[in-house]
Image 1: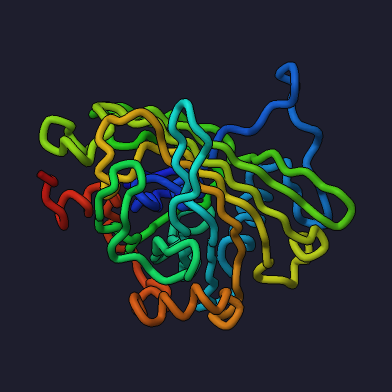
Image 2: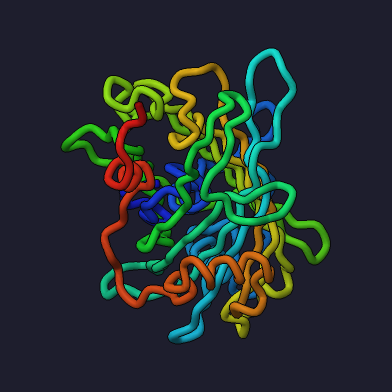
Length: 324
């Protein structure tokens, strides 16, 4: 789960942790291919919902990530572990990572599909106690550092029949993003429907290593996100249901977090998180809700109008100074 840009599930832009969960939703990966490059099997079809069409995908993703009920609000959450991957040694579990979002769908005059207005907050936690970490001893350095928690108050995404393939940070001025139909690789097993999206980026690092010597991993950043959804097909295909509950998993690969002060040391971060949706705040896991309510209560209320999104790395540059 940062950034700007207008894409199929829209510019959510405020990439989670500099990149992350919302990023994947805002920039859905290209439809997966089966072994040998063959296209995926035909998508599920029922009644008026055809997941082989862009219109069917718009409806399905709107019901998964939001609610079609007028004025309705939905929430999402994630809970997992941030790990360190260093060549020549076992992967280390470093800190917990939890968070939640609040969102609403709006229609836009003259536009097909929906705009999802969303807020996201998240926290790095102690693996043993679950307490939020405001200081953490980096075991690779033996040094105390200050985690930079997630706070994206404006995550604006589009859910449209056409995807625009945007780029992070380094889109060439004056170029027009390539477009393709918004059709995702759904799978069905009995009354379950599954979706996995995978997105990979190689982009300019906004943290200039000449200035952010201890925070920047280098001139370019490599980021990957993999997110899965698991929902009931009977609910997704039911035209009377404005929203559908889902469960899933999020895997995120990125350079060292700037606040870890790892600089260009070999290695990277690996996230593994359970995810889910919540029709009400009471359906959010209690620990996540309690921490968000205590530390970022404004994130429990969904936005009512679009605001300019800000990438997490840009917020880091504004709120922190280069370490010495």
